[in-house]
Length: 400
Length: 237
Image 1 (cartoon, rainbow over the protein chains, first blue to last red):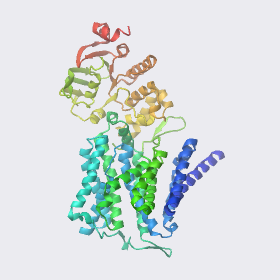
Image 2: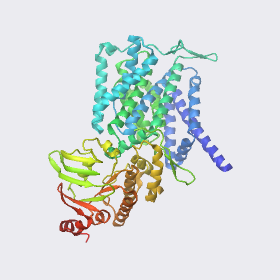
Image 3: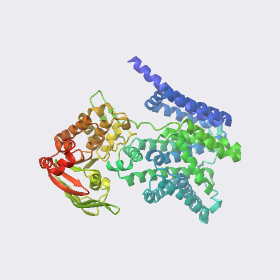
Image 4: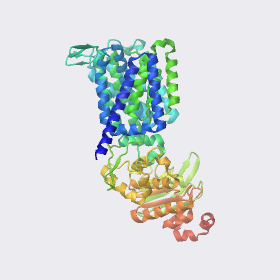
């Protein structure tokens, strides 16, 4: 009994240590200059690959799964303290805010790319739809950004459905081509619509306000003055937590199972009574809704949006985030998004060679670990065995 | 219960089924014998709505179902074990089984069903948390059948359950089919080339050749028939 409790405790401590370790790696990657960041990443990658070879990583996975609560609390506390840790460096906070925004989109994209196996090359179009919706409503109609976030969500989801319905008649590469077309159309439409600011974008987008407190004002807590990015950091952190919660609930539901089934064999999935159109459309529209929320956040964060924020390159970067982090793994996708955002920012020193370096790093990581940093796991077991009295089914969150 | 009336199907311009009429009563096991390319699989696809007939009607429980989308037909109580099982290799055995009960809206019903199915297939209980892709051929076939049973169908369609299995495993599979027929009292439509085996578990049968039903009758009648003897039983006999 004591032994068992001891083992429990040690696993719990391991989960906490790993969680803290990942936070520290991200933190070091964030604050250090480029060479150190790359070194830290290389060590991290090496640790994962070695752990996989020796089998030790399976123990860590098991401990993390068992003590998810502790691990999440540690990560949460770390995130809450981050603005203090970077001692109000507003540039670093900006990087983290962008990382959070991209994480939300990547989580949404993961429903299509990771779970259902539909390669969507247009996440930036959905992201842009959310951003433009909220920005236009605020600038031209004076509607509160809080309402704008909901409208952004709704519009992006609507675009997902309207576009997805005809597009999902195609499959595989052809679907990807159709999504590329959507992305190109979106960018061209923005550039050529004067009402949306055309190539000049939309300037002067108001920030969020709560009870008269503007998010664009510095935050003062306990006599400390933190830059205004701190407000946005907490907002993005909150929304990212909600998005991650929703994503993992979906993953463990029957819908998530149906998505995985479709990814493996669409025809067989249909013979199990899955309504293919509905379930695939769901992946599209929920993913788009996530991107829409992220877009609205971005618009009211930066106060200026233009077509170049939502172009094809951005879509590619978002896809890379999901690929790098690990398909169909919520934690992996967030990790991948944060890391790539940080690397992208660090590479600013290279100016013209930035994309080249970016691609190079990505290729090296994917050669070392083609399945992504945290790859897809066996789906969480849904049936528990109680005292050999048979199986107790716990199908979490149903739905057709 | 399930009835096809003068059903014809085409793939583009190529006719696959011509005026096929069959009828399966509740609780009855029926086999459909036919050579490669006779249209056996097409027939099953037509029943579950994956191929739409160009003429004729498919009736199930008194309702015309041939214009329904596939998922609706499946949900009305028809389960299929596809050719080569059609498992989800990267999902666990457990999740493959749960896919069978995918459309069951009352989740409490799933656990007892699973319990029941696992008593028929004890091997799957051992492999419960393994990926389906790691199973042997026989286990895969069993999983395919078990998954279909989890849907609690009124009729079970099976596409060549003996395909690609060793003779001993074929015997096991047919023993299971026989057991299902006796215990579960569901109708079974067995599409097969292995006539000897198929005729040992069913009550009636049809022979499909080049898209048409050329023969139908009880098991004994078919066994005595010269066409069946020559084409389907000679090698085995």
